[in-house]
Image 1: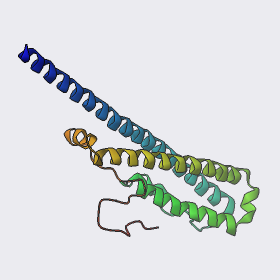
Image 2: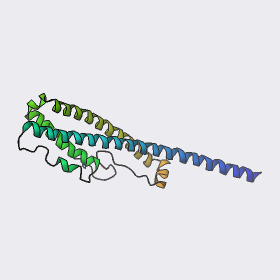
Image 3: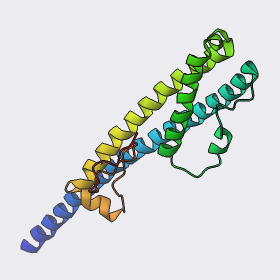
Image 4: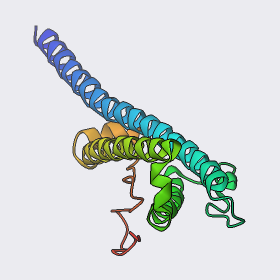
Length: 181
């Protein structure tokens, strides 16, 4: 009889550890899935933002009919092998040019196509900000799980590493001023 109780005790302990493992693994996978969804939303918003800037480039060239190139090099951005974070920064530079064009050439505000571009840009900016917030929320959740017991053991078993936030800042290093505008 004592052997039976010992065997039953071992089965209960192994079962409890199995349930704990599955629970922690599912929490990690839930966060990873949410991060993947956010990355998809960010990709989509950046592609749309890029397309808006290409439309703006063509419209500005056609409407202003001058030899000045406002969005120089924008057509080459798509071919560059850069992260979404770096792409976002490059597109923000072009968006700043678009804002300056709006100030320098107020007659363009009467153009239906230009108004549409500005409206589309505003909508995509809102989507992008929401997606970044969503990404950072679940990245924080995943990183917390990776740092805490017992989910850190499960994460290590599956090679799940700490992810950086969308701003590219590595919270694990000693550099405190690595976020640059």
